[in-house]
Length: 207
Image (spheres, rainbow, N blue to C red):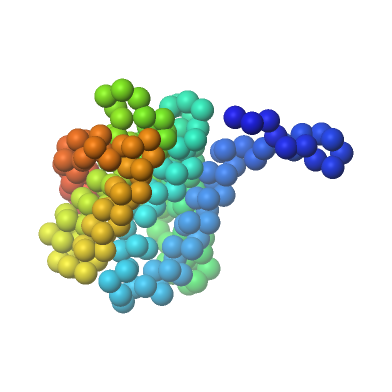
């Protein structure tokens, strides 16, 4: 990692802490989600603002360059959980009713999902040995599993299902380019999708 760039006074410019970036990104994504749901709510793109997959992209990317797996997990949790107050604050300002139980449920989900996808992001950026490809496969699997299970089988929204699966395929192509992980990603994809489908089944029972 290169040293901070010097300022006009000759002193090095302090880097913004990664945890602060994670919180800021999470708040912004959450805040933008509420109006985006209204804008896209009647289109096949509604799944991009009313689903789990989009909220897991932020912790994945923000935590990718963390120094250690533990740091990646914490950064992922901060980014994911921060989306909850960002979303509900804007939703409340727009006149929507907010229930504490729902906020608590999504906060808990943010802790679990943020930690898992934070680690996945770190694993993707720092591929090692037999675990190479697993991190990228987890994010791809979230989109594929949500498209097939939630939008396809449960809700019967064919258009939204195709969009979610299309995003999953695009992510596989893009993420796999880093350190040439395409083949390793494919090796992990089937079990990752199975775990993702199970996770969505459990979430539907709990949330």
